[in-house]
Length: 115
Image 1 (cartoon, rainbow, N blue to C red):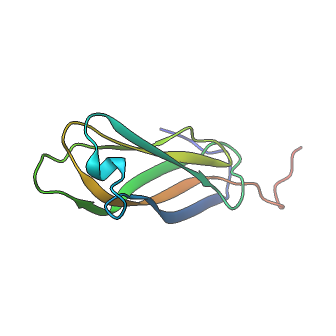
Image 2 (image 1 turned 90 degrees about the vertical axis):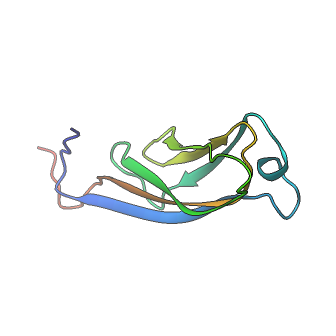
């Protein structure tokens, strides 16, 4: 369990399109084997310590000709941002993916005194 030494919490959230490969025959749609994409996210303000970040699929458009193989995660989380990492492998074909994310963590307060 993570315990925060702050009475103020910051919550930031958003959505981002990771790729849209069906239009131009990009690797997630036309390739096979191991394929990865990583998209950096920058917070509007810094957290006091790296926040807890959750990512989830908001849109997933894929071929129905193969099994759905994917790995979606938040990586390299810092006080200023993180990377959304998506991977697939084998013969799975993704046309496009949009990810929703949320970061929750301690933030500074002008009212906090350091005695």
